[in-house]
Image (cartoon, rainbow over all chains, first blue to last red; front, side, top):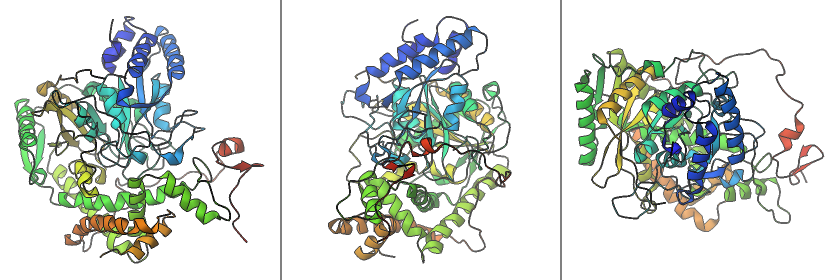
Length: 495
Length: 95
């Protein structure tokens, strides 16, 4: 077999079990692809020794007949996950040199299942960004280009390295995290599948915290079946995360029948934004037609508080971030600024945080500090938390009326060029998450499925939103959409 | 609500991030752009609505109040920028 790195998880698993290929062969193929792809800046810490060691162990397990689905499959891990003995710096200068003494629960579960870690993946600093341009490692680059134009495009963010690596076949799949759209938007930008499960499905323990009430991990994969396989391994109760749900994790893959006859799919009118590009409108209508052809019923629905989701998010997420990022003080881990004669502890904090945090992170920490400060707490933070309850109730009302899933565009546009948004004010960049952020605020599962190309040949994604804890049904609807859309485009190799 | 330079300086101080004086006007202007966006929330009628505490209705797990780990001073200090004699070291705190 050649080009083993181009396989998906399910294909590779089946080939491993059939004895057609070994994990070492799969892993070597990916390591070679990674070394040839430095131009994408997707892998920022390569771990070939760990990878080959785990691949050899996986081959032993497979030969012994003890092989869970992820066993022997080479994947990339977002830099936000703490990985024991391997640099884990959330793409921030402030965590330079940090090598955790422990492993995140999610990456441990993947390792226990036999998955092979190839290395750590680029991202926006502390997962704050929508284009991977806030990373201390520099931009991750999309493998996609606009036709013959050689301008570099964003792979989206914050899980930009994960998106770029999976799309360019540097790994079979990757972990991502999603606080406002950071799995689904990059997945849509590069033509792959990404699912954010219900809040509480995946343990947050050992994942560098951004906004704790919104953060969830999830898989970024080449297709929906692979997402089902990897998600199952990542989920599950963890006593070390008090918000992790004590619920059984179903066999998601077994739920992929492709049969969605009689399902009710909601089309929310508030997601039809002014100035939405006609290509996005068309993609959305095409997606609805595909689900209808597959036997689902389309229902016009209303989610009246949609407009207020982004402003509520830009209070709640910075507020939680300002609290979570208070721990970066130059004392316990990471970087400490060089101090001048006579500098005391306050100067140490202030200088360390000024040189360690990038511009966007500083801005969000300070906005969060402001909305939580005396006199503004009620006006901003409490009001945003009230609006968050109204946004959640919008979804509850719709699901109570029998809606099984909601179909929306994943992003308001195709991928933009790196540097193109530099002059825009920060709010313009925030609008990238307009269709995804509601899902985090309501704690719901959401999946992005590639569904078409724009006029420049760039991927466009559709998002499906499901009922809480019903990822299995959501994945099945996504599977039906994937089958109907038949998206097979891949970026041409230029790197 | 408009943020002036002295408020921006105060926020930076509270956040323990050093901001040079000449960067304050741009910072205040960015804050105002973002807060202007956030102020749309004032249009929403939130009378009688509780602030969200937990997105999924779950009770936080409790456990026995017992020691679950410890005795790993080396690991705790392993990533410190300055660790001496088994402690984190910092500049002088009291005069």
